[in-house]
Amino acid sequence: MKKYTEKETELFYDEEDELYRSFWDENGSLHWGLFNKGNEDYLTASENLTNLMAVQSGINSKSKILDLGCGNGEVTIQLAKKYGCNIVGVDISGVRIENANKKLKGDSAVSSLVKFKKASATDLPFDKEEFTHLWSQATIYHVHDKDKALSEVYRVLKKGGIFVFDDLTKPKQEISKDSRKYVYERLLFDTPFSFETYKKKLEEIGFKIVYSKNISNHLSKSYHVLKDILEGRLEDNAKIKYIQDYKRLIFAYQKMIEAIENKELGWAIFVCEK
Image (cartoon, rainbow, N blue to C red; front, side, top):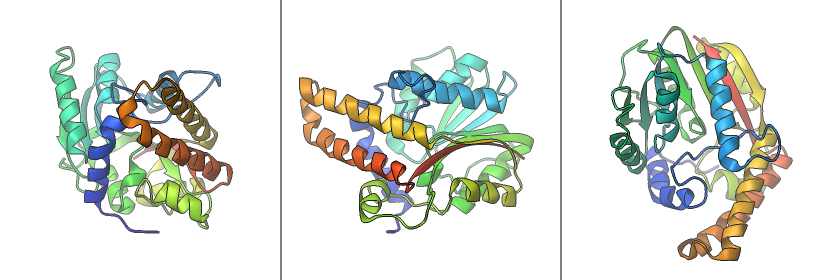
């Protein structure tokens, strides 16, 4: 696998944010979904994941949460509104943090509960044991020093605190040329973790696994639905600006689906207690 830098990942998301928002979610909630009924629209499936994570982690009005990889801040603000909790969102993308702060300025109902900062997962600018919960969606696979990031998570969590997150996994280490090119290298990432070895790593750091589930089938469904959305956009030419980008992503998403079917890419959710 090629090795990528944190700066390359930052630039990737700075440059791609507008494109993804054009078909994924205009409000910037750019993560995968749980299709519990099988026929939900994409945003409903995304909300299903957020709701499951919130329930499993026991978030309430007394929680102090760090949202690691908060992106455009959509879910961060949703959590503050729903639970009345204090929450800080951090992300490596300056563009997305700027979007999140703009969103926050327009929402006085939660302005006292939410803050956003640009920061690296490997060097969190917070004190030891500062948070009751650490929340992360579709983020840690992008971090190139995952051991350091997971250790930082452990450091900033209070004793008894909860780490709830989803992440991509690699069910087998030997993968095809297409999966390497159109999945891993396209997204500038690699991971040493399968579903089982991820749990072992978390336990080595000191976490107790409270809940874990392999949800790779929902990742495949997510990309099927996203591919259908893109194909629909091409048919009606709703976003002429992005025609070539949409064609590129349709091809890439088919390769993502094939990688999942071939056990070359997986997705899992974990809830851990410090």
